[in-house]
Image 1: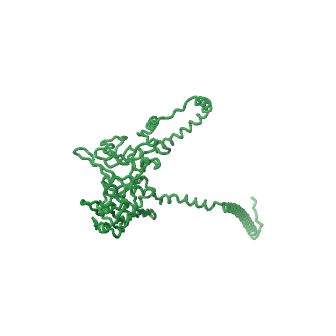
Image 2: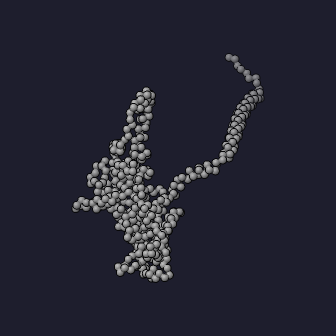
Image 3: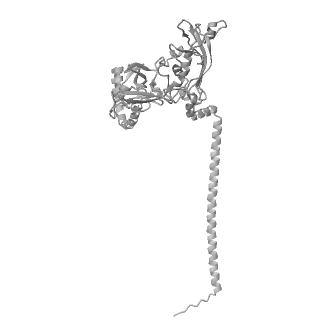
Length: 464
């Protein structure tokens, strides 16, 4: 067997191993350097690309800036944009000045005992609406034929303030869908609130409004049905279009010979009734549905109603009837077990037209009062008053608002003719030689005080 003999010295072997290690290190260094170079090139390309992109965008921005600055109506545009952004806050702070008439109609007593206004200042700013006015109360006739300045009218006027209320809310259809405010008619051509004074079972039928059910966008339920049917109609349009072109020529000749037939009011009422299920009537040339603002308790109440039957419950909830959802008034009924009659009550404890002195508001204050003579030389009581109202009364977002006077006083409306009769020529001071005017005693010398405290304990029944 042959034997191998290693003739390479040990030193030579160590040299060869060192040489191989050196070559490996050189190779690794070359690879790392190449990788670093590639990374550097990629970084430089990205950096250069970003610089070029930024420069391009800067050029575009400069061009747009120059174009905007050359726009002549820029200030107006920015103003409009700001206003559009503030629509919500503007609407929130918007006030309804026209409600002054409604408030005056409920506020100022008319009839035998009345107050006439000679000067009125309305301030609705800063969330604290106030009326400041110069007015005069009528004079009372004595039984012996003499005349007495009647402070009792002014005193009654002041003491009625804690019992004044307001009401607002929204009209809804029988499905409880809110009806747009522009679809509701609440007053006649003279500005008087619509009211039925017919007495049924000892109760006046009360206030109501007309719903323009056939108006565009006025029937929420019909709008929902139209949206559901739109998709079905679109699928039919493609097939119908092919036949429409063929039928156009035939229809043209037929329409030229046929006479146009207009829909009669009776036909229109029947069509709307069949489509909506509501009792429709005609008012001022419009097709309307009457919605009661005052609940018709006797007509609506059912002891054991069916699920789909129109009725009002003893808790005041109204079902399947178009009605008015009040934000102030709550209704309730109490059944008499003996004769099964229902006693209905209405309560409005929170919506005070003139807040109490306890509410950090002055309510009504009388600054001065004196004897005087009106334009017909009758003795009257002149006085100056300031009344502070609840801010919600003139808030634009509170729809269908109405001011309510205490039960048992003059029935008010907001008729413009009635408002006009409230104003008169200012009464004159007593002349120096007019001893009757100067020396006439008052029937209540202590009535020259602010409003007395409210005795209602937060309750107010029979608001209508």
